[in-house]
Length: 356
Length: 242
Image (cartoon, rainbow over the protein chains, first blue to last red):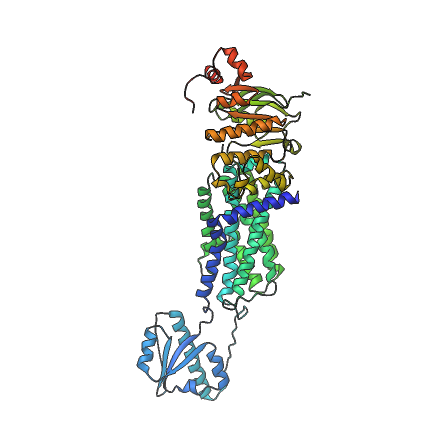
């Protein structure tokens, strides 16, 4: 392989891609917009601190020891007010989750059913405080104690989930569209034929094309991690985050192979675009790139298990957010490469030099 | 071993039901300007593509400069320059970027590519993207890309189709100059005036066969007509094609 030829072909391909404004936008900027938007949208999702208004004196809160009170305030924000009617109005408007006040020995809680999760949260928290106070009132030590803790790093905020997922989607889009368009366009414009007539090896041409896609994917990775790491979004990378690099490389190869099949089959760029969308959209939605699939019906999870993006996303989350290492990555890398090999073989069967 | 630049014997190629090329034999001498003429669908392009080694003939043999283009022969590819019928350009690249990219495929330095651009009079358009070049400029660029590595053997497929008279005359001068430097040039065309002024010899093709080969003036004399166009019409008839 001649390095000069390789460099100049890579340059020609990269320029062709980047100068196509629409393609560059959809492949590079569009996914980043999702990260910027979703990241801002779900920024405070994980705190889910219930907010209640306390009207007048409420014994169980007011008599809490300081230490316990601070613990409670991590999950429950208590604001004081003297105007119960106004506080109730705030609950109805959804500005706060509940109002609490005391009448004699009775602690009264009023909440809105509009946001069931937060209302339930507020109810459970106030309920548990009441229970504790009751037990304390008996003068006996509690019979059982519950200590619960999240399995992930406590910082597992939405951005920790969004970054690997959206990055996987971005890499998939870039690689599928990139290779499909190149193949269709080069066949249509007879560049394939022209290259056949030049003393350049197929290996050099393929290496240049793969190199451009891999380089773009790595730039995307750097930009995504960079943007997500700014304090506003606050992505915290776990120890082996750099394993995302080989993962992205293998993912790019796998998705390029999808693009090759599409490009080998499609006669026009329009057809390639349509088919690529049909492949990518369901894959993105069902791979957990946008939302977790833990709650999805079993059949969706089965379908999801067929997509390489699902495994890429899972492994990316493992190394970027969950502190996992080679063990989580190697099987996925192997699988992605196998997938790439299989689909490339299919593409080779469908390959045509020209449309004639 | 023959000394001819191109020897083609008994070429046949079938696409489905269509016998595109049906037993073509040609010999092109070194330094010759050779024209393949024929109406649309006569099999000119298929013959040319099989000769270049782009398509494998069903039957027949091709020798270029004494070598076979099959299997793909990089040493031979360096010695031939090909302009495809459609202008095969990389998308979104400027004229200079195109020719430099093609030059690098042959290991030719960028300065030589720029000089070639000058030769075809495109230095002013060097920064223009391929899709904004006029028809004549695009043709000149694609010929420049075919010549950038200084080939001995040049194939041009309908290089002047769709050009205005000025652009055609300019291209003719360019093609004559290429041939004048001692290169063997093979072109297909359906412009008879073009063949008459440029070609040392022409082969008139129809229905996948060579009907007649000879110098334009000889053919005119032989058939007792006024021009090559009359030769052509007499040989290929007057019905509409495609």
